[in-house]
Image (cartoon, rainbow, N blue to C red; front, side, top):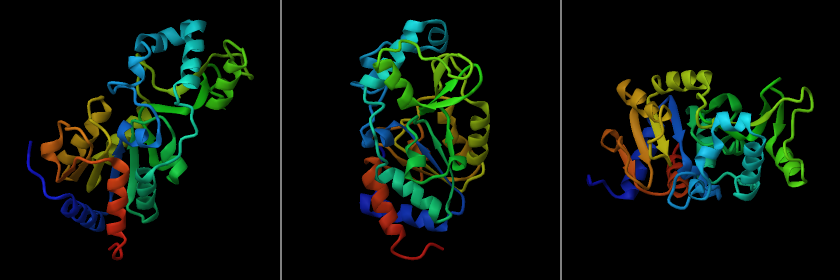
Length: 262
């Protein structure tokens, strides 16, 4: 593995990059969510070790009442519906927004915690959708996820839309379902036009989301990577930090605030 400077020096270099950058894009993965107590899907003890992902394909969901019931039961039992709060990484990213440094957040996460931390909806591109809302496949009416999970817990096997009776589906991207094209196009555009691209808590193995740092680097942006495990983009990174998301970003923002941002 490539040798890296001390963490203290990397934090200093990272803060300096933030000072001189004008268009920052932050890309977040499961390593940010897990620090808020949200279970990971792909880790050795993640959700897919307890449930069969084949049970949650888009086709199976829309064609099977049993599959829908199983999905909402999973959401109620797995901890995904816990009242998670933003952690230091989310708050640091929101702080970049308040400073006028943040162009956007691109996230693979489905928990809505970037918005809860203070980032506006129009600055957050959720490439895999979210589990905060449920959407009617018939009329597009949205419902809070908690309301639908509660109905299932109370014995309603397959809650339908109150407006049109249509099927209700979590507003996240399922297996076999295309990513939201508008979000993907916007994220690609921002990635290719930033001067600093920061990856936090992603192993960059899920595509097409994982192409985003490549677009940034190919366009000349500096790349910072914060992830405990190696990624295929490590060698392209200007700064590579093998630490947790929250602690690292808290230290970085403390260093940024030591002097006025230019």
